[in-house]
Each structure stands twice: as structure tokens, then as C-alpha cells.
Image: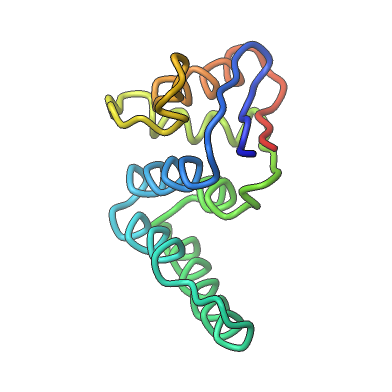
Length: 141
């Protein structure tokens, strides 16, 4: 099981960790401090229920502050924090994110490395560009 992210004409598959790493990369490209903050979600979130509640209260407060201060757009924060299991964004949000990622030449493999069609950042850029140019939405599940 993993994540398939798709637009009208493109899609790619990856594991949940690969998708989390892509969203950390998008966060980093938006703002270095936001990238560090987003990465802490993967690295530092505790497993115990009582600890998780406190962690997420602090984490969400920092995210809100960064959005309010203009360090990160609401569109990027929303993409980076929707469920990794299922989510969607519309053309307007895709356009904001595509503007941030379009010139990035990240060569990291994000998909299943044993597959010939292993997802790359270029695949993600194609999905966002497709949504911007052809409308619709980007979905993942």
C-alpha cells in the first residue's frame, strides 16, 4: 500500500514516507524555516496519545504563526498538512505550489526504487503543471 497522486493526465505512486519527503521538500522550497518545521513532524512526533496532543498543539501554533507572518502561504501549509492517506487541492492552490517547485531539479527518488517508473520530483512537477494548465484538481489516496 502507498499513495497515488494524480492530476487529469499524470499520476505516480510512492510509499507514505516518499510522499512525506516530497511534502517536506515543497515546504523547504517555500521557506527554509518552514521546511525545518515540516520535517520535525516526521522526525519528532511522539506515538503516545497524551504526548501527541501537546506536540500537535505546539506544532499547529507555530504553523499558524508562520502563515500569519507570511513566511509560508496557506496553500503550501494546507498541502503539507493534509492527510497523507487521502487529500486534494484545486487549481489555484496547485498554481501557487507549481510556481515554487517548477525550477527545482531535485534528483531524489521518492517512489518505489525497484520499479522502472519510480516516482521523482519531476513527476510531481508534471502533475502540478498539468493541473495548472488543464484545470481540475490534484488528488492522492
